[in-house]
Image (cartoon, rainbow, N blue to C red; front, side, top):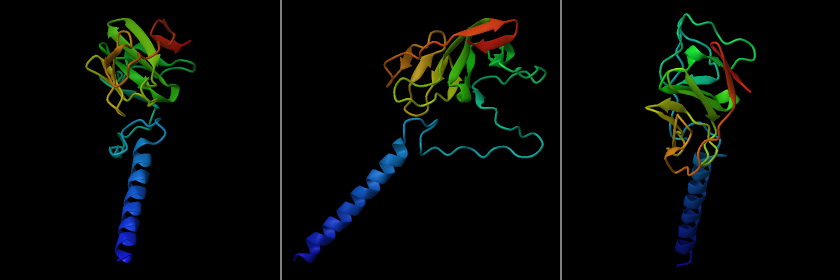
Length: 165
């Protein structure tokens, strides 16, 4: 009778080990940009494909005729859609334009578990890791699990240039 209990323990131990590995892979270090189970779409190919810029526009893309940002510049005002925003993952900042001509900046690091926020849509800055949402006007929590607002970042808007200060 002793072989059967040992076999069950071995199976149970293997199941627990597998579950632990799966949980560790799913949770990661908290710095991921999207849930582990979500696959990223394949990048476009062909002549229209653009190299990644390190930023992600969540609403309207920048005007094709607008010149690219210059050295030291975070973005052009035309890069930030009115009523929306743009996440600059490489700089860990999100710039929003709650009202036409009014620009705000916040940390792009979610206050819940430290993930980088992913998008700006429908008046909120959205974290894909656990679903937290923050208001574009002031960074306050619109939906948890986060309980603290996104910290404000200092920007300077001169003409059509936005710089992180």
